[in-house]
Image (cartoon, rainbow, N blue to C red; front, side):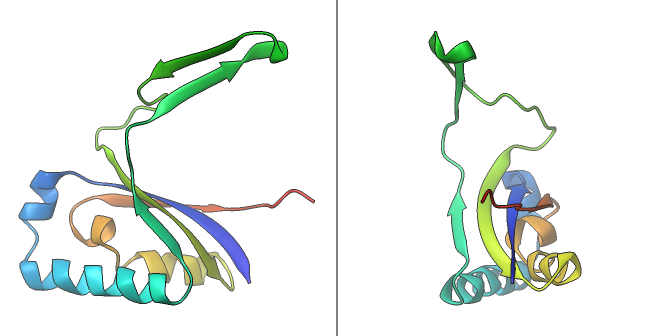
Length: 110
């Protein structure tokens, strides 16, 4: 099975305007994925880390990437291929609650 990193984007406004039955089903889907071994979590406050030439460690609060929607959470999932990974995340809260989920194939280092 291949591994995929997912990044969910969404805001409270989109979440609240989604029918509660749809939200509940999405949370149940997340719980099912987690029970199946997926690592799923909400995003906390980010910190940028730089250490150019391994000579000067610098940190800065906040995200480096910018988006019109805030990052809501992350997951590491396993799927046979990209199509299966897409099908899995298409039922998650960010996907159904007027947000978006990115799916990134994880190419593990040997």
